[in-house]
Image (cartoon, rainbow, N blue to C red; front, side, top):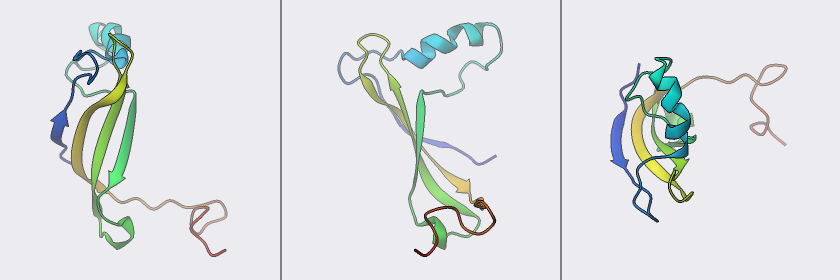
Length: 105
């Protein structure tokens, strides 16, 4: 498994709270042992390639931006940013070839 490097963690920019809505939702699941405590979680993850994946070999450096909602005031915000080398996978479109939007046309 690729190594994930934590770049930065954030608290709510509006009220300073660190608890998120996803954290509240997962509390019971963690308590029942269905999810390991300390595992990073978020409502949404956005993966941002740092170089053009078309020129990469087997992996591409990416940033992973985790977004969630403050459990205190409801403000959406970025809760953490990570970096890693993600493996490149080929996506085959319908009927073979490139995915939609990557062909001529």
